[in-house]
Length: 223
Image (cartoon, rainbow, N blue to C red; front, side, top):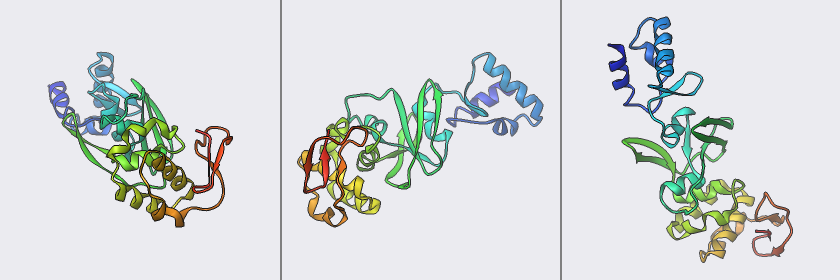
């Protein structure tokens, strides 16, 4: 009896917990035993401690594991079909501490102080918070070389990108994105020049800062 009710109920949500099951099976001990049996019979999957799902889709469950969070960077751009290289990990951003989980593939939660630029998107009959193109590109800074997201540049809303960068107000991000956009035919210098400090930084922060100095953006072109 319980199995049919629970399976039907939890098809409606990407993840659920013991407390959720306890709402149906009122005895907590029996609820625990039920979950254990369902796991052994492989009728449900455990994502992490007290976090279960009926779905074997890490993209679907990702933002429901840790809230608040949103899918971003190459994972968001892959969702939109804007990058050729399909990531073998999922990248989410949160205003909570960074964490990682392994569920079919690695799900990364990266801390950000810039928790904006995303909205719910339809995915497999659910709604998932996913960054828009502009914020996904901004979130890529320091995570991957920006060259990996060049294919997405034609889809950028120039005004929105400028507004986002002004909201971030972080010179190192603005300089890297500004140079990246300029290399790809999008000129944003006039609108952003007042946010640029005169300290040189490497274009790719994960590589040694050896390369030509760009005196306009104060960036060492090392990538």
